[in-house]
Image (cartoon, rainbow, N blue to C red; front, side, top):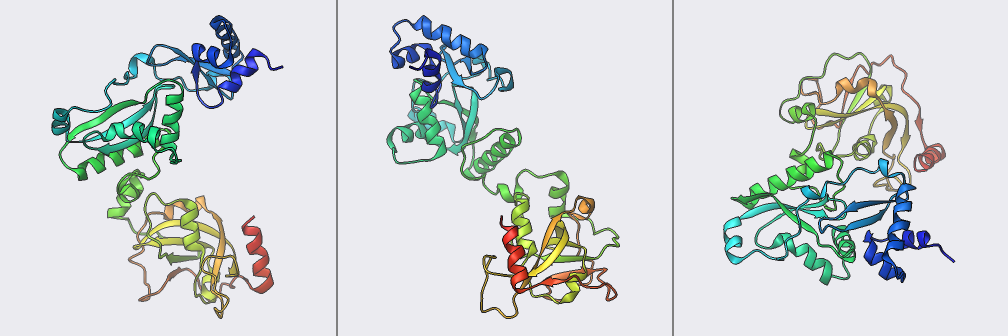
Length: 353
């Protein structure tokens, strides 16, 4: 038969609960027995106990010692949920556009950022209670909060915003800032225009408007003008896939030691070329009727060449409509082997495992 401690841990699998609720769910007549067992589990690092905004102590599971869990925001700094679930008509008229956050009262952490007017900030809690078939992450978290006998904390980051366009800008900035600070948000999409104008290093941001020219380089380079729109938010994997293939190329490209991604005349990625191969079944946009097959490279990260990133190549000679720009790929350099047929299919299989 399971011990009281084991039963407590089992009951906390889905949501934090206070001692009173635990006692009722487990059928324990004396709340103090649950309290003592929970304190022992806390001392063992198997759960943590913290004060919720309503003043009750909640018990929550933890995978390690309590000291490894970030401390929740002190209760006195967490806004107590409003009893009203709507703004008055007068407030709605005066408040204008606003940007809001939803905070989890169980640990004090923000989990969603949004923008709206009227009673939009309260709509999510209503949706969680009525849209039973929705599996949206934010609604799942709200349901867990409700299951713990608590309400979502609603807060406004900025209100009386004059236009929806400005509200979009504030919302996107708050989302970027919170994610950069390490918060895991339930927002399913990034903020408005965040991919283009959002969080970026100063070097990347400056290069969007004015990129310095590519410095003098002695290594053999092939620079691909990628068709995919580059943004500061593009992942390394997405950029690599857009650059590595698939191209109609002669042997000159295979003289290069490094490959670079170029978008709108500015370098955005660099890789050390390991080998070249034909496009085969399973590759992006593969067409068995394509003769001869297009080619691509397999590459590895090249941090030693990062000084070539975010640089303009507009000053370099390049043919009209050319998909690649070559630098230092002299005729006396022996082109690397191009893997074809079964050899290409074999290495392609290893790339995908």
